[in-house]
Structures are given as structure tokens and as C-alpha cells.
Amino acid sequence: MPWRRMRLRNAEVLARCDASGELVSNEGRVEVRYRPNDGRAYFAGVSNLKPLSGAPKIEPDSFCGAGEAVKKPSNTKKKASQTSSSTPAPEKPEGDEILAYADGACSGNPGPAGVGAVALWADQMRELSEYIGEATNNIAELTGILRAIELAQELGRPLRLYTDSKYSIGVLTQGWKVKANKELVAKVRRALDAHPDTKLFHVRGHQGVRLNEHADELAVRAVQSRESTGWVGT
Image (cartoon, one colour):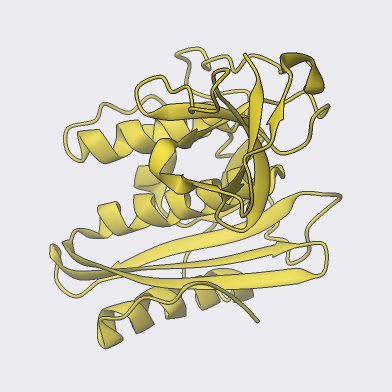
């Protein structure tokens, strides 16, 4: 199948299409590539893909090299792409990775809830403060992780993510039985499967870890203001 040049938020991508240029989706997800020969296949929601200005440009199937198939991690306590082992909390990304800290907050549990996240890569730093309405703290924590994974997928970069949520680490990487938030947990797991270059780490909350504390501040700000900023540069 050929490829069509599309816009995925802030990135130009190549998306699978048919000969007429119509996107080809599977359960609402379209295979995309950020670069023709990086060897990694990603997937994006149809609604997130927008046409580029001007006439659609179709590239042949051979324009992109073979993409590595995404393998679902085995059902073990630890997955190859994720870990909950203790590790010093860094403040600088390594190589081409995104270093992110994500947190959630709510007033009451459940109650008005917010998400905060900080992401650094190359010479870039972005932060997110998002109000998600009435929710539990666990929902806010999972949503923060999801936002960081989505950003890394859009930018086509590996992700090293820190969270102080033992619950999130447990349901995502340690095989904890999911009794609540099943749909959201499944959504985050699918995002991890679609972006295997992700590593999750647990960091102790409210222990003076600067970037984790900042993510918490952003989450609390969202609860207090009832407003969302999306990802903004700092």
C-alpha cells in the first residue's frame, strides 16, 4: 500500500493509504512513519491525522523501508520496555530520548482532577497542565503517563518516564489485576505497545525531586484553575 503525507499535530508523517489517497485504518488506527527508513512503525488515530496544504502527495510502498513489528510484552511481572526498579532521578535526557515526569492530583478522591507533566529532549522543554474533570487520583496519574507516551510517539523519540504512582507501575508493568479504570488502563497499555521505546520508572513523591515536584505543581494548578494548557514550551 502507498503512503500519504499527513500532519500529526506538530509533525509531518507518512500514513498508509490506498491508491486513491484514502487512509487505511484498522480499528480506527493508521500506520504512520516519522521517517522513511527509521525501521519503526507507529499508529495514530484517524481523527488526529490532517491533510497537508496543497494537493495530496502519494508515495509508493517502497518509499518506506520495512517497519519493525510491535510485539506485545509477555505477561510477566516486568516487561522488557518498562521497569519499576529504583534509579536516581535524572534532570537531563540522554541521546535522542525524551525524559518526562508525569503526575496527577485531585481535590477529593474522586473529585476535580488534573494532570501535570514535564518533558525534555535535545534543547527543548515542554510542560502540560490539564484539567480532566471529576476523576480519581489514579485516573489522573494514568492520564499523565498517557500524555507523555503520546508526545513521544508523535515526535518519534524513545521515552524515559518517571511517575510516583505505584498503582500505575503495578497495573502497567507488574501484572496487577485491574479492578477499576479498565478502559483507561487498556488504553495506556495499547499506547505502550504502540511505542515500545518506553521505559517507566518509579520515583518517590514529595521527596524533593525537582522535576517530579514541578509535575505535581502543574497538576495542582489544573485542579485549582479548572483550565488546560496543553503542551507549552518553557
